[in-house]
Picture 1: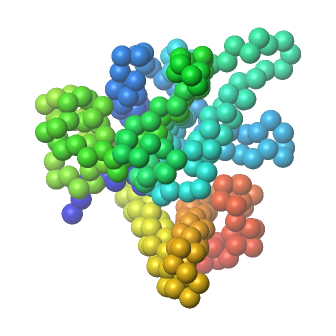
Picture 2 (picture 1 turned 180 degrees about the vertical axis):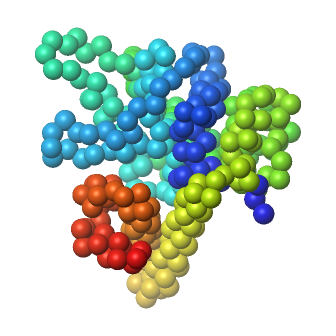
Length: 303
């Protein structure tokens, strides 16, 4: 029986890092991530819904969005499954925050730095294979010298982090080890190394959750598991169908089918949660991409 929250469920991730009561955990993690570069003393959570500049613009919803005491804007995203154009999506998210800094009237384009941190529970073929952390900046192609500190994207590919508990040397490595393995722990490691891990243990202890929070957590876990099962099944059936058309084509079809079906299933479960919170059909449509008819059918199934 797991004792701690799975931090890579949608609800669990936000419970640990996205609340006022646990803000110091996020500050500690970010300071360890950027150790030696700058120190965050405080931060303020911002609106995770980034509305476009025109009515036709696509709305963007972040997992976590905050601003530091020095004005740096930081996006933290968690992604469990690979998807096409994931790197481009992170660039789009980062760019959207920059664009939204623009003001009407006179302005000298003195933008604030925007950093995006992506936790990835998968391997993206566009990033360096075997490398756990990749930092992308604006730099000269020939000499590698940074030309602007206003945009930065940090990709953390968890499958490539293979250190054991005893091999972790820095607090950042300890963070990654804990987050990657936390839902399997019977005890929280590193309690004697840094007090932040004691706070993390308290925040993420399943036994301390209220019934309402436990229900939300279990719903989030079910969504994650169902999406994974659908993804794997679709790949399997695609491969079986592909034997008639060629293995390579079947694999491609299976992967694409799995991604689409898993995403649709996730949107349905997300709609159920939003309906239970009393959100309007229009808002659920914006968040999930489901039609009004689909949302009405989901609502009827809940009664």
